[in-house]
Amino acid sequence: MLLEIDNLQVVYPTPARVVRAVDGVSLSVQPGERLGLIGESGSGKSTIALAIMRLIKPPGQIAGGRILLDGEDLLTLDDEEMRRRRLAEVALITQGAMNSLNPVLRIRPQIIDGLEAHGIKLSKSGYEQRIAELLRSVDLDPEVADLYPHQLSGGMKQRVCIATAISLRPKLIIADEPTSALDVVVQKRIMQTLRRVQREIGASVILIGHDMGLMAQFAQRVAVMRSGQLVEVNTVKEIFTKPAHPYTRLLMDSLPSLERRDSLLAKAELAAAAASSAAAGDQ
Amino acid sequence: MPPLLEMRQVTKVFGGGGMFQRRRVTALRDFSLVIEGEPPTIIAVVGESGSGKSTMANLMLGLETPTSGAVLYKGTDLRRLSREQWREFRRDVQAIFQDPFGVYNPFYKVDHVLTTPIEKFQLARSREEARKMIEQALLAVGLRPEDTLGRYPHQLSGGQRQRTMVARTLLLRPKIIVADEPVSMVDASLRVTVLANLLQLKEQFGISLIYITHDLATAYQISDRIIVLHRGIVVEDGDPEQIVKRPQHPYTKLLISSIPRPDPDQVWDDEIPERDGVLAESQLTSLTAEQLEPADRRTNPPSPVP
Image (cartoon, chains in turn yellow, blue):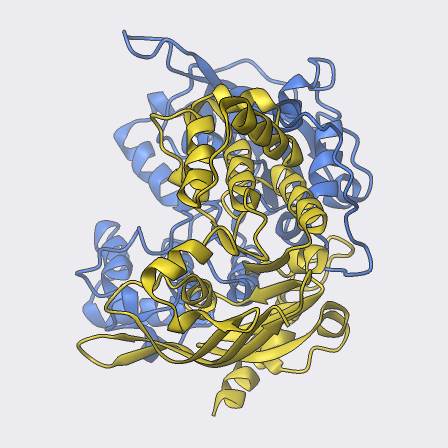
């Protein structure tokens, strides 16, 4: 097992009450596996990503549980040890990753920065070669290294972020809605690239999102989150053919089809019924 | 009888003037659309970012003025409407926007967005009548008045907020609703109910809908006609079944093949057309002028401006 999350608890104290953003989640990821983590806004899926990266901002805090990466509990590491694990062993690509590029620096120094921070010192031509390889692996022209972020499209910037994320060949890549700010045509290409590089470096990927279609295209297993808890984890085929939890069924029923025109009103009634039975399941 | 609303060869160019706006961008080019209003129809305008779809919505609502061409309400150019006609237009043509939070003032209860139009257009003679109208409108979109009224916007879900907006437009009994991405910020499991509300407006209240979206699948589900916009140009226009099942234009084909199908047995391969990403991402711009010609123009030929 590459990643083992055991009874993870993340809480955000507010004046009124303590919000349990992640409430006792246990989940594991095999080496090389692509796991989809799906849920709606506020379900806690991104909080899990931040917890794995140990980037939960106060007053939020990890209140309990273990996160084992290759058998090592990330929650027991000191800050410096954790810093070294980030990017090198576990990399995060977020929806806004493309906006995290420094606007006044060309792409080259920004990628080099990540390598240097993890103690990789190369000659000028060594860096040059490494960066060209990385950019090519995400289907970018190596000349992109000479450009500034504003000269790139959103999709190209997100590719640069993928290149950075894989630059140290991490064991785990967490992709949190990596394409939700992009158009579908670009999204498809980015996801194809991400899947190819993931296979090439043998990394596991946790894809976080809300689009069931994208999960069907990318993930091998899917975990469904709702209100801080996992309601169902299964292979993508089982989830799509035999969704067990009413909430998963609700997500499936709400999908607009391109195959046939259904009665929207009937669908809305189905969804309403499923919503109330999903809510009943919470009790 | 002139049509209720018509866009006649509308072109909108941004920039070009002034010292700092050297780049001219044609957001919408030579766009024509006739909305008769009778029988009510749902027309979906589908496009990605930069396609000009929101510009089209703003022009249609009179929030932007065309660079050339005209938007006509009952045969009169929006720029030449009398005060009385403008007031009528404002009531007949309503908008629903993307962000179901941004339209609310967080300091007011949600009641505010419902009482304002009643006061503005003097729809009710008494408070009780206003209250009754609001309750009926909420019930019509499947919201329980007791769960909605008296609450603050943040206490409602995105779906409830957007359905309250649908209820608001319903109070005004408009003839046309222009909805710009009304469900893209609503959680997936609630989208279908908002869409069903919009469909109900047509079927129960005879209101036509211009549904502007990037999502071809919901457009296919709800509309009577689909217009595909790409870089300000109509590339395809017609029956939803035809467009989704037998797309003619290369851009429509690309769009359809890019939609992630919720079917794990039909998974994308790893093939990407070019290794060169600079080209891959800008490939759309390289479609030739010929390819950008409309595959089917169903819009009526322009008639002379009165």
